[in-house]
Image (cartoon, rainbow, N blue to C red; front, top):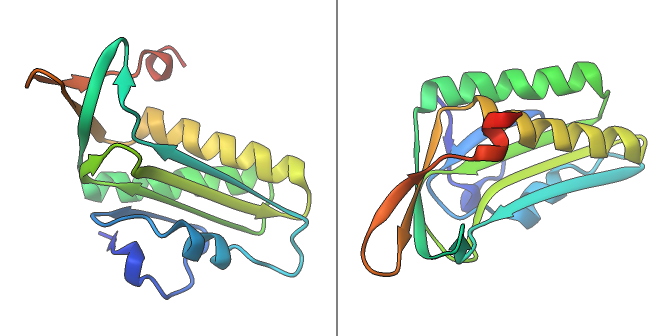
Length: 156
C-alpha cells in the first residue's frame, strides 16, 4: 500500500500511482517528469468545483480502498505505457476531505512527442475514473450530502 504526502515527496515518482491524504504538490510532480529525451509534457489536474448538477457544493470527501486502488492504478499506468510509449508518468489521487479549489487528482506524462503524452494522459485519467475504488461524497449548502455517480464515466 502506498500512501504519500506529496508535500514531502522527494523520491523520484516516475511511472507510479499514489493516494495522498495531503495537498498534491503539482510543481514537485511536474519537475519529476523532466527527461532530456522528452519533447513534451501533458498534465491533467482535476479540481474541486463549487457546483454540480445545479447544486452548490461546499466541499467533498473521497473514500478509497487503497490496496486495490494502488494495484489497479499501477496497472492503468502500465497499460498506458504499452499503448502510448512515453518516458515518464505519475498519477496522484487525493483521499479525505477537500475544499473548493483543491486539486483532487493529478496526472502527468512526458514523452518524446506530444501525441503520446496527450493520449497517455487521457487514457490514465479516464481509466482511473472508471476502474478504481474511489468514491466521492459532496457536501451541499443546506447541510445535506450525497455520494456522486459519474454518469459520463458509467456510460464509458
